[in-house]
Structures are given as C-alpha cells and as structure tokens.
Length: 617
Ligand code: BGC
Image 1: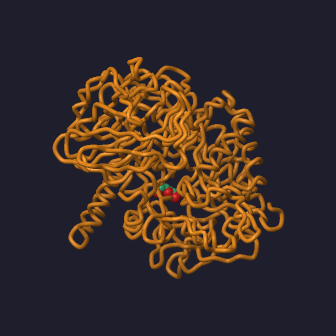
Image 2: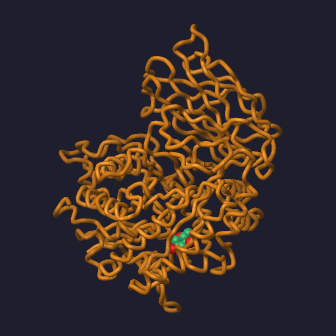
Image 3: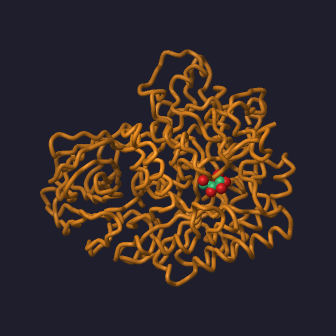
C-alpha cells in the first residue's frame, strides 16, 4: 500500500522488503566582468557580478567567480560597495561585511575549484539611495583586474527600462550553448534560458502577496515587511485548467496572453526575459491522489480534448511572433510520468498511463516546435523516485516518451525536481547515506526507508546520469523548485549532533526536513521558503542550471473531505494519516485548523513559510 501523490507522494517501494532568473530582476542585471590581463597576476580570476532582483530597498547579488589560474583549495572573495548596501544573508559561501567591504569565504563543499572552474556565491542586501554595482573584485587577495565595463546605473525600480549594459551578462566559457545567445532577444535556443535573462514577476502573485502584507501590517509589521519581499521573486504561471488559458477560471489568475503581454512590458531593452508556465491538465490528472484531480477524463475522447482544447490553444498563443523574444520555460505535467512508473497498482493510474504518455508526447511536440519554448519534464523528487528500483525505470519512461516525439530526445531541454514538494535541496548534516551509526547505514533509518537519496542535489546529479545514460543530451539542464523547501525556523538544526547512537535518533537530530514522513506532501506544517531563484547556483559546470519557484508559496496544495464538502484529499487532512507501505503510519503533517482548496490562497501557510524561510528573507 502506498500513497502516492507526488509532490505529493511517492510510492514507497517496499523498502524493508525489496529494498526496494532570474531572477528577479527588477533592477536589471548589472553585469560586470573583470578579467586579469596582467602577466603578474597570471593566477587570476574573472568576476561577473549580477543584480538578480531589486525592489528599490533590497536586492540580490551573485558573483560568478572563475579561476583563471591554478586550482584553488579554498577561496575568499572580497569587494566593496560605494553606497550603504547592507548584507542580510548569503549562500554558496560564508558571507560577512565590514564597513563597505564584503567578503565571502568558501563553504566546505565548494572550496575546491579547478583551474577554469567557477563558483557562484550569492546574497541578499538592503540599501537606500543608489545601488551601484561594485567595480573591483579580489579572490585570495589577487585582484581580478582588467577591463571594467560601464556599470549599470540601475537605481530605478523594475519596470523602468534599463539604460544599460550593451552586453548581457557574459556566459562563462565553460557553459555549453547550443547557439549563441543574442543580446536582447529570446530568439535562438540557448543552453540555459535563465542565464543572462531577467525573470517575469507574476503580477497575480504579487497581488496575492500584497493583499496579505496589507492585512498583516497593522498587527505584525515585522512579518509584513518580510512578506513584502516575496512579491519581488519570479513564480510560475499555472495553466491548471482549460479556463486558465483565457483567465476565466477564477477571479485571481489572468490568462496566458495577458501574462505574456505583461512580460513584454517588464522586459528591459536588450535583455531577454524568462517566463515559466506550468502545463498541468492531462486526462485523469493526479491519478494517485485527489487534491488536484483533473477536469479531463482518462479516455480517448479526453486525450483529444487535452490536445485540441488545451495544448493547441496554448501552443498557438506561445507561437505568436510578438512573444518570440520571451524565453518561455514550460514545466511539463508534474507527477504524471512518475505516477506511470510507480503507481500502476492504483487502477486510476493504470487507466491514465497511456493518456499521460500520449499527452506528454503531444505537448512536447507542439511546444518544442516553438523555438523560444524550453521543455522541462517533471521528475518528481528524491523521496519518490530515489530508490534504484524506481530511478532506473523512471529514466527509461522519460526516454521512451521523449523518443516517441518527432524531435526525439531533443524535444526535452531538461528536467525539474521537487515541483511543489518540500524535500530539501541539501541535508547539510547528512551528506553520506552510507555512514554507519550503531552498526547500520543512515539510509536504513525509518525516515529514509533504504532510499539512498536524502536530498534534491544528490538526486538530480544521479538522475542526470541515468537520463544521459538513456540517451538524453549531456546538455540537459536540471531545475529544482526551491519555493518551499527551506525548513528554517527554530527547529532547524544548526550544528552536526554526533551524540545519537542509532540511525533513527541520529537522523532525527540532524535532518533539516522537519516532516515525520517523507511521503507527506500537502500544506506542510513548519515548512519555509527555500533558496531564492538563482541561476547556476553551483557554478557554470554543474548540471543544475537554476533554482526556480514553480509552486507559488501561499497557494494551497489541496483541501480534504468534510461533512460540508465531499471533494478533497484525505492526505491534506491535518487529522489524517499517511502510511509508508511498510506498516508505518504518520500524521499527514498538514497545517492544523485550515481547509483550503488547491491553488487558493492560504494565509496561514504563507505566513508560516515566510517566517521559516531559509535563508531568511
Ligand atoms: C493546483 C493548481 C494550482 C497550483 C499552483 C496545484 O497544486 O492543483 O490548481 O494552480 O498548485 O498553486
């Protein structure tokens, strides 16, 4: 027995038995490259600084530093701001500020950088007045000096077209690119659609956020101030029903054309903009759960409806030449092919599977035919497909469907994990699933059920290898939905605790994932906003090309049946239970006291996620 909804749950294979940016960009990307041109500094570096979002009082910055000399075993980056920019938090290194000078020292996992390799520390800042980009950078005391292009005078808020940089942020030379990215256009099909682009800020989402900010301001201005920052990050546009295409599906969400038109108005001259759209309406959708059951039946007629009433109109809109400069990232049918792999024991999934496969094939064909559309297929998450008995068959299933398309595997630009789920990107204190505690490997802990993949980073690396092994291009990019997988707040461990002597107590003391069961997926109590949308969070050489926010934080995962309404999903009932298939029963982990339908605003969930954000907002 298992549950299973994906992002929702995974089916737990009988573990004990068979083991078995975007970035936001409001203020515009200030790209600044400095290169060592001096023989005396042959052991040099290149630093590319970008403003990833800018709200007028806060901003995100990332610095891609490339080692142009011998390998580094450790690195320290330093640079100075001219204004009053003040560090709030940072990642991919330890950030500190003294006066105007910012220093970042490597984290344990990214100190070693090969010659020619890159790392990308990133942080968030507050400021007032002018937010001028720094002009000089040093790594390990060596100045990355050389030609400094004019800085972007982007003191202006987002919607103002930037006057700016004649060159887009440069792509580090190690990045594969299928075609040169033309400055300014979304035209041409690049290897990483997020690189050198700004991101679409969804005004519908900003509206939801700002209404909550206004409601919370009088009683809790501190919370409201943190909440307000959420409106400055890109989130996906969900096409979760046929009516969503025209925007007639509800009173909050506009239609697809409206969003694309808004993206054109947000686009800065000379810089591509990326817009994420979720394709989510297969016949018999959400076959292993009830929260997001679809409107289209899993029948031959349903497949025809999906193709002609859903995919065709979407494709027609996306193919409009006036949108050719927008890089459209399509997130293709969350949960569907994973359900086809692991939930065949559920009659609804067995029935739906052929329609999922044909529907995804059709969607890939139509979307790939549009040069500025990028297809990212959903691969669930580590806690669903991490077991080898699931991972291999899943990679085969993705390859089977992709190979059936006209362009074959080339119709897929990459894959996304953790869509709308809560699994952490990393478990910083549990890096080794085979670590022996009390004579047993960590993955034998009840929480992991012999699944060796504890987090999305490791899962994506392994999935990449499997997928390339099945024939996908080595240039595929992996995305992680980090919208709600932060798990900050008071319950997050901050240091490794080596005292526990059993695998279960060791895992409980050290995991950042605060769920009692990894199969819990609905409106999780204690969850927090995860890493901000980031391009190349691990540098240009890593296959993870971006962190994205696909699930808009604050929108519910689903409701549950009660005396007054019969629809909904018991997995969303805070008083309900989930089971692991191995005799274990757990709380659903859903936030107590609320019952909000899928996709609708859930104020308490948003407040909690903002409060528990990691890194803090
Ligand atoms: C729901 C959709 C919703 C999306 C974004 C999904 O779980 O099924 O209706 O648009 O989340 O909130």
